[in-house]
Image (cartoon, rainbow, N blue to C red):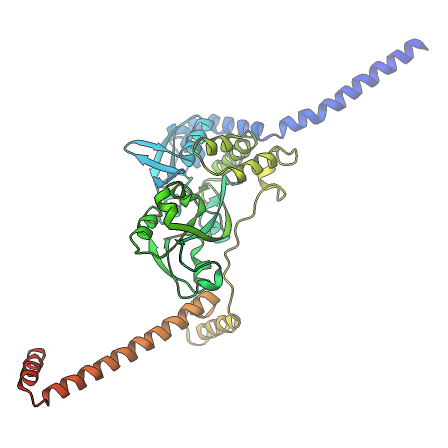
Length: 407
């Protein structure tokens, strides 16, 4: 009886041990690290025979060439700065870490807000890490990596004595912005006029020389300028809006393996505090990254499926513009006209509230200019007529000479 009891105890202990070990093994098999290692091993194994084939996947091409082309800014303080051949900043450090993870060299390519999406889509860079906010509108152009590597909001900068504190102070104001900034549509929808610049680095200078009274840009961009007493004494942040996560981006076609690998890399960089350390080294605000570090250490997020878990990842910013009350009627009219007369007419100015507001303002401004031109012409004509009929030669003859010269 004793022997049987001992035997049963041993069997039970072994069974419990095996059962206890299974979840651990399963967790290891499902970790992002294991998934990434397997994906890279598979790509490297396929590389020798695929390197000369046309149309190979970008990850395979990167491993074949031993380099990855990464688009970064070079005039964005704290995030991407270039001095001669030296680059530094938070995004530059992230780019180098990604290349090390893949075991390849990094080739930096300079991009800006106006060019970054086009350069990814046209295969001039393999990856963009370029202060790019992830909004739903951009999802159709590039594939964003999840989880996101940073977050910011747009802040409105103006002289301290300018009375701007909320949205109701914006209608009619001219605001300096960069081409391609996701917040531009929001500003227009509140009645602002936009003055466009190619580079964000131009905005502080235009504020200081009074070309611009107001400027809108990511709070992360202006962070370094507010450390300078000369700038901080004159300008202040009036209010912020549109919190948006920043995403690394790859091309939508031919980048499935690369995107999957980068998703896993981004997970581990958050979990292990790599992003957080880079932010601290570059004096970048780290509040968002501290919160993300905690998120990606959670068991339900720290898996190979974490980048698709809606409880872990952040949604893209919804930038859908508010439609006008008659947008459906306009669409029906366009469709009916095309079906009846074969005319493909587009009336986008009538479909969204912001576009309709701009259209109305444009019509009003055009009418004012026309009326002003007619009035000015009439007044000049009357003035010439009065001068030509004057009894004084000193008035009459110079105006007559001017009239002959103009004729």
